[in-house]
Amino acid sequence: MSEPHRIVIVGGGAGGLELATRLGDSLGASRRAAVTLVDRNETHMWKPLLHEAAAGSLDVHAHQIDFMAQAHWHHFAFRLGALEALDRARRTITIGAVVDAEGLAMLPRRELAYDTLILCVGGIANDYGTPGVREYASTLESAADAERFHRRLIAACARANAAGEAGARPDVNVVIIGAGATGVELAAQLRDTTHVLASYGLASFDARSQVKITLLEAADRILPPLPERVSTATAKILADLDVDIHVGERVTRIDCSTIATADGKLLPYDLVVWSAGVKAPDWLAGFGGLTTNRVHQVVVGDTLQSVDDPDVFALGDCAQTPWKPGVPLPPLAQAAHQQASYVARMMKRRIAGEPLTPFRYHNYGSLVSLGDASAVGNLMGGLIGGAMFVEGLIARVMYNANYTLHLAALHGWARVALGSAGRFLRERTEPRVKLH
Ligand SMILES: Cc1cc2nc3c(=O)[nH]c(=O)nc-3n(C[C@H](O)[C@H](O)[C@H](O)COP(=O)(O)OP(=O)(O)OC[C@H]3O[C@@H](n4cnc5c(N)ncnc54)[C@H](O)[C@@H]3O)c2cc1C
Image (cartoon, rainbow, N blue to C red):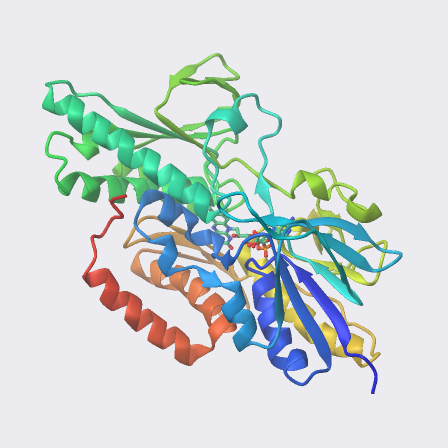
C-alpha cells in the first residue's frame, strides 16, 4: 500500500486550524493523508476577539483552543515551533527549537517532510516604518498583546483613582491610531468597559469624563474600506460615546509620551494602540525563494498555489490572492474561512489526481461591533440581492454569528451549543470586566 500524502499546514489561526480540522476529519481519519499542523503557540485564539480581550470584556482563557487536544479529536498531528526555513527542492520545512517558560530546552530544531505545504501564518501590524511604533505602541496581534494592553489600562485607571483620592483629577488619554474595524471596535468597547471598571470600587475616578479616547485616521473618514453610510453611522455612535475622532491625520512619530502628526500636532498619551494596517511577517519576504509582494504576502494564483510552486499553497492574511481586477482579497477572517473550506475540498481532488477548480470569494459584507449591544455594517450577496445597511442589535447578532461559524467548523454544532451555554452561565457568576 502506498504511503499517505503528507499535508503540512503551518499556522493554526482562523484559516489554518479550520483547515487542519476539516482535513483531519476527512482525509486523516480515513488514512488517505497524514495531516500535520505546525504553530509557534500551543493554543489558538480567534483574532477578531482580541479587541474585547484588550478592553477586558472577554477572558482570553475561556476562548483559547488547545492545539494538542484539537489534533487528538480530529485525526491530525500537532508540532509546536516556529517555521524557520523551507527547502522546496527537498520538500522539507525546518521548525525552530522550543524553550519552556524558564528558558530550558524543550524541543530541538527539527525537519518535517511534506508533499503539500499550506502556509497560513497570518499577518502583523504594518507600522509603515513610523519611528516609535514598535517601542511605545501596543498592537493587537495575539492574546498576549491584548492581555498586556489590558493590564496597562487597569494600572492607568488605578493610578487616576489614587490621584483622585489625593484630590487631583487626571485624564487617562487613550489614543488609537487607525480607524479601521479594529480601532473603531476597540474605541467603542473601551468606553463600555472603563465605565464598568470604575463601578468596581474605583470611587475616586469618573471613567466617562476622565478616560479620553481619541481615534486618529490618515484617510478622510473612518472605516475607509466600508461604504460611506456605514462610516457616517459609526462616527455618530462613537461621538455619542465621547470618542474624539480626527480624520486626515497621519502619524509621523511616537515617543515616550507624545504622538506627532504630519501637520505638526503633538498629542499626549497614556496608552497608545497602533491598528493602522496589516502586512505579512517580515521573515516571509522571499521565503524559500517564493514570490512575495511589497507587504511580504506570498503571491498565489486562483487555486491558492504559489505562482512558483504547485506544492506550496498559501491562504489568509499571509497570501496575496486575486479577487477583483487589480484588487487582492482583503485580510479578513471571512476570507480565511472560505479559503480553508476551499483548500479542504481541493486536497481531495489533488490526492485523487484530479484538476483543481478556481477559488471564488463570496463577499457577505462587513460588520463592525460597537460595544456590547450594537453593531453597524453592510450585508451583501444573493440572499438579499445587493447591499443592505444594518445596525443595532440585529447587526450585533449577525456579527456574533461569524465567531459561531468558526467554532462550528472546529467543534461541530452540538459542542458549540454546549460551549455557549457554559459560557453564558460562567459570565453570570463573574465580573463583567476582567479586573487583572
Ligand atoms: C484585533 C483584530 C480584530 C479583527 N476583527 C476582524 C473582524 O471583525 N472581522 C474579520 O473578518 N476579520 C477581523 N480581523 C482579521 C482576521 O482576524 C484575520 O484576517 C484572520 O485571523 C486571518 O487568518 P489567518 O488564518 O490568515 O491568520 P491568523 O488568524 O493570524 O493565524 C496565524 C497563525 O499562524 C501562526 N504563526 C505565525 N507565524 C508562525 C511561524 N513562524 N511558525 C508557526 N506558526 C506561525 C500564529 O501563531 C497563528 O496561530 C481582525 C484582526 C485583528 C488583529
